[in-house]
Image (cartoon, rainbow, N blue to C red):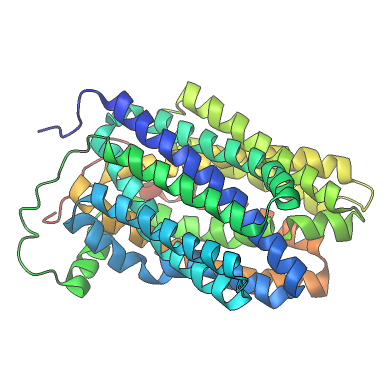
Length: 414
């Protein structure tokens, strides 16, 4: 029986309205915290530690988090996660009011917020196919990408204004309100409850986490795409971190130049997301992903070959990098969502995220050393090679190239 409910548009857009407030306030807070830590410590080590707090919980806990997402009410898990994020942020508000806002406390709170997000994000992705018809998943993914793009465009400007006129505690309190709005919209949303025939009795985290990996392996095409995505993450996560260095060091620009690049990149993301939500992508979604990879690799190649006087062309390349992003993520997530039974999606999505994120610290370490020795512009060229290789693998490996043909819903017993 199809568990999607009839009034899916109302439920989808109700949830995403709350997410819009929460995502924007969290993004504003993220910028404010980075600027605060930079002002107070001036330490690259502290900034690296704050970045590590962001992806470490999802990378380490992902396979086990999926077990709980598949076992318990996803709606309750998302509400509890948002409340945990709000409570952690409120600790910083209290510390700020008392004058005890230390760097150590900020890092601990960032870790707690990241744990909440590690539960919330895959849970939200697993819930989406429960309320959205399968033929609308790609369009809804485009809407989600557009929401994220708008947040990335607005948040730096809002953060800059608030950081100058408010205390950090005030900005944190704004994020608490954003999280509570997300909780409210989840509370009034109707989400079907899954029936877990085989998951009754005592929870066995390790056993069920291994089952998640076994379920992912039964679909060789999707497993191949997940592994190829690690190559994409290896190339792109360090590249995004090196954007400011490219703008300010190689092109001899200022923080204004770095901001221009970030904003133009986000505008590209927004345009790509809107086009995807309108178009829906190619019939075989893998070809859209290959096209995204080719556009990204071409933009990276050009960026890596520019002379120090080529900042204007770099801005254009950043725009096309932004455009390419939604055509990858907007296809990758719906492919996962439509390839496995809803009751296994928590484990599959969390596990796939963990596999991808394993390469993040490797990429960040390698790119830092490489950029120091050979120049930051040469890392952009290397990243282009890696993404081009990812495109080649998507086309050359038959099980990946045809993984979207007659998508099979994989069951535990298959």
